[in-house]
Amino acid sequence: MNRITFQIPPFPIFVKAGKGTFQKGKKHFRRTFEVVDCLYVRKGKLYMQEEDQQYEVAEGEYLILAPHREHFGYEPCKEETEVYWFHFAAEFSFRNAVQLQWTDVLQKEGTFTEPASFLLQIPQYGRVQNKELAERMLEMLTEMEGAVSIEERLKQPLHFYQVLIFLQKEALAIPSAAEKVCEQTVAYIQRYYNRQLKMTDIAQDLHYHEDYLTRCMQKTMGVGPLQYLNEVRLQKAKQLLAATTEKVKTISQQVGIQDEMYFSRLFRKQEGISPQEYRRMMQRIL
Image 1 (cartoon, rainbow, N blue to C red):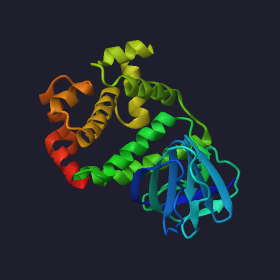
Image 2: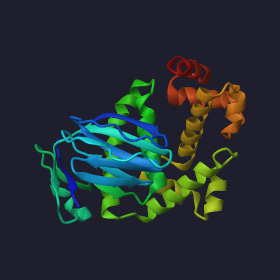
Image 3: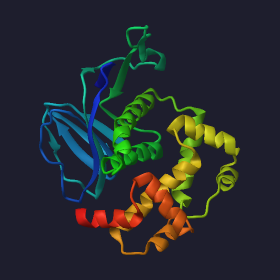
């Protein structure tokens, strides 16, 4: 299988991210890009062709499409299909290479005047093992696209690099104990985010010590369980603000935050605007 091989530096340049839905009977449009296009299927199946090569990209799978090569849907979707995508520019090569070991990624140590050299080698087409974490990272990358805060937009390329590193680690099949614990915690929070959860509840139900859960999530995702819980709640709240006319207090309670004032402060801190201002902005956009 072909592997997309990046020599770093130079680092790939993030361009744009988003998500979309192909209804049953629709197929991906025909086009040729000047940048790399990565597609990840969250639900359903996408039938893609690049030049003469065809791929069936199922739920939990991704496909990296090269620049200057025509790609298109060769067959309509047989069910509603949800897709995350992101574009980036990079110097790379295709290699039908022997799989790297994690220690092979560092090619050369840095000096006082020259940076370290790395080699990433990611399969052009593959399946992720940690689906929940992959979709959380891609959702965050996509959310940053519409962020009002300049700080969040500046962080977006950094998050893109984390996605690339995640795909490399997935390709090397090295989920650590911390990643397994993190995956359990993420799934638990996504299921029960609308409850009045405390750290003690999460730790007790998952049978881990609170400190251990926090260390695992910090190491794997860079956030603790409660910070991730707030991210999930605010993501759900934004969807409700954009799609419904429910009062802010009602939405706050629906996502597990009983105190409307605390919810509004939390929302403003992360988004830079109030829930009401976010709703008005989305109404203008939609």
